[in-house]
Amino acid sequence: MQILHRTLIAGWIALVGALVPLTASAAPFAAHVMDGRTGKEIYSQNADARLHPASLTKMMTLYMAFTAIERGQVRLDSRFTVTPHAAGQPPSRLGLRAGQKIELRYLIRAAAVKSANDAATAIGEGLAGSEAKFGQQMTAMARALGMKNSNFRNANGLTQEGHYSSARDMSVLGRRLFYDFPQYYSIFSRRSADAGIATVSSTNKRFLDSYQGADGIKTGYTRAAGFNLTASAQRGSKRIIATVLGGQSTAQRNAVMAQLLDTGFGKAPTRVKEIRPEAPAYIVERKRSVQVARAEPQARPPVAAARPVKGSTVPVEPARRQAEAPVQPAAAPVLAQASVGSARPARKPAGAPASVKVASAEPAAIEAAVKLATADAAPPPAPRPGPAAQAKAPRTLGSTFAAAEPKEAEPAGIAVPRVSTKLLAASKPVRKSDAVILAAMEEEGDRSEPEAVQIVSRPSTKGRGNHGITLGRFKTKAEAEQLLLRIALQESAVLNNATRRVGNTPKGWEANFSGLTRDAAQLACDKLAARSQRCTVLGN
Image 1 (cartoon, rainbow, N blue to C red):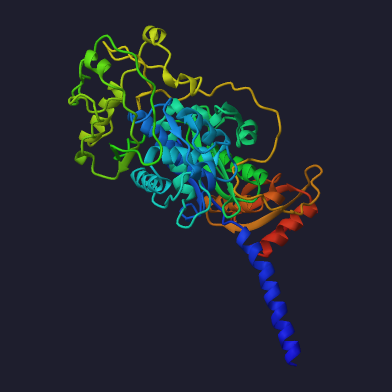
Image 2: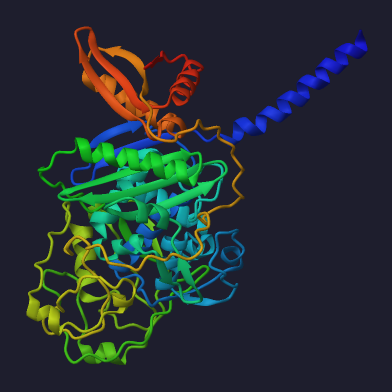
């Protein structure tokens, strides 16, 4: 009897041990859809659940990098030193080496297009001094943007305790990237990019190529997170932004995203008043010393004349003294949460003239920083330059970052090399006609672990059948539509080719799927019945 008892216990332990990995590998599912023009929610499912964002984290890493560039703290040609920690990140990787110096523009391209973990870590350490401190800054910026369920511990999104976000927060962040940095947004629609040491291919090219109007934004995958995607698409006057967390595969995630965007375009009004988000109340300061990496801007040619920027309280030294002053490396920025009116002045670089506050910042960037530090509201957009001014504008440092970057007129009386310095004034990006890369259609590369093989049993779907299923009747049409969408997302493997229909009957609104074969309809009902969802097969 004791032997039999011990045998049963051993068998139970073995069974539990076999089931636990299967349960742990199934990531929770969440989705969120918004009207990109207004930020208004169109659909949500577990949208505020705190889940692993995986490489969607890099959206915030890039947002922080764009912010630092626009505020004059670094430039696209600033060179960051790669630390052993950054070089040692697991794939997907650009292939950086410890001690290597690389321009920020290439790190941005690698992080945005290839989802390179080593490049993202190098950005975080170069901007904040350490990845831990950068995570704190990312979290503080998230709060300033209204992301209530996000906490960041690293720059690349690899699974770490206390590192989480939500589908709603990622949609909010995707919208902020579109509106706050239109001059850089086109990087998210690139199928490939020159990352300095290699040409990299996009992890999102399958969806960009398959969905009409898609122009971004970011994929993500880890075993704990599942297959994630934040996408944005425009059709006519409508722009829809959506997020999927916990997809089962690249194909299933992309199919679910297509259904979500289709729903968004179907429900969003054609005409609506655009509501642009206000600039975040998040103050930027400088530190005298750099802890890990130094940004080393190239020497700048002397200028002919200089004058104070209109509306700025920061004195600007005459051009002669600026030209004679030694060029200092740009220190890593420290971002601190504070009220807009209580920012401390930036420390001056050693050896710089006493009246120069930030030697490496452009005049327009100084003006923007001063307005952010002294006004409660976001700075008003600057007037757009006319065609003549655009034609005379010199090639910018940022022009090699994205081929379609908008041009801006130089401030009167100032002729200096410049980077993009307007946060809200640039026009919306125009989607580029990039050549589609048809080379290796491998799985996306932003993974910390290999994808587990998943076997999905699917019924034969040769042609459309004359069968369907009904999920019951409901009091309102909206209730029936919401159930149909939720079931379509959950059972996309079976209902991928089915048509959702809501019928108006005397007894209520009936939720149906049609166009199924008999086998597919029966399989769908069997799966739904296992989750206590009422389902009846329709047809002969």
